[in-house]
Structures are given as structure tokens and as C-alpha cells.
Length: 177
Image (tube, rainbow, N blue to C red; front, side):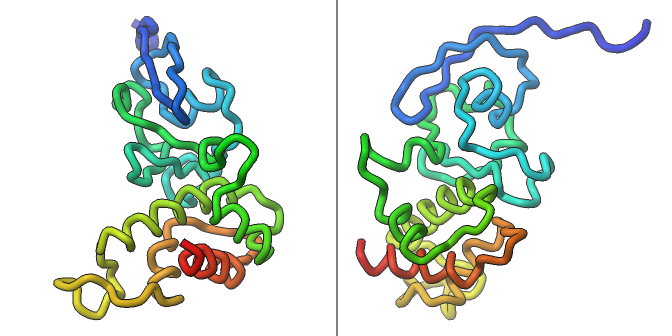
């Protein structure tokens, strides 16, 4: 018996950026491919397709995830936010504005994942979540230092090396929040 038989598509409804997308997907379609190839949302990028670069980072119920490592069917009922959903109508988010003001991108390929990750980072910090560089993980981190930002963004790679500007943009957005 050569190869595995095709798995028939099934209806999947994804709530992405406040809109319901009714899709017909095979159960093994990744969330990344569902967003790009089926929903037409091209902002989320496919980088390594192995969860190592962070270019595909999106938010699932506010939690950052690598969309290349998860199946779309696993996210029915969750609120998915992609880079397209960070702005409201014609107004950029404070973080998007800070990325522009601090020149926190060069080629821009990693920027959607960087923005989604940084959005979650700021919410995690506001919620009191510690990181591996937090001095005392039993207490709320006192300051969102550059070291904290670098550690919390460590899952997102920028091949152009815009890290200093990314840290500056996150720090500025945090200060303006």
C-alpha cells in the first residue's frame, strides 16, 4: 500500500483578528498554513518552519505561539491575533509606532513575529510574569530592563541584527503604556 491515504478536509472555524474564518482543512494543516494559504493573511511569515526563528509568532488568547508548530484545528474557539490585528482601523498600536520611530527593522521579514511577541511580552510583564533573568521569580519584576526585554524576545531571531533598536522600541512602548 503506497503512501498514506489523504485525510478528508473538515470544517474549521478560526476567530482571527476579531473575524470568523470558516475553512475546510485537513486536520494536519498547521495554523501558519491556515492563516496564510486558506485565510489569506500573509503578515505571518514562514521562516524556518521548525519553531526556531519566531517569524511565525501569533497570539492565541493573548499567549504567543509559533504558528508553524501547532495545528489549526487545535485553535478553534480561541481568539487568534496576527500582525494584521494589532492595529485598530487606521491607527497603529503603540508598539508598531515605536518600531517605526526606533527603526526596529531592516528587511522586515521577522517584524510581524517580533511585534506579536513584543505585544505578549508587555502583557506578560504587566501581569507580573517573571523571566529567567528576573532577580527573584517569587515577586513581580520591578523594572522591564533591557536584559528582561532581550530574554523575553529571545525566541525571535532577526537575521539583519536590529536587536538594539527592537529593545529600544519595546522599552519606549512600555514607557508610553
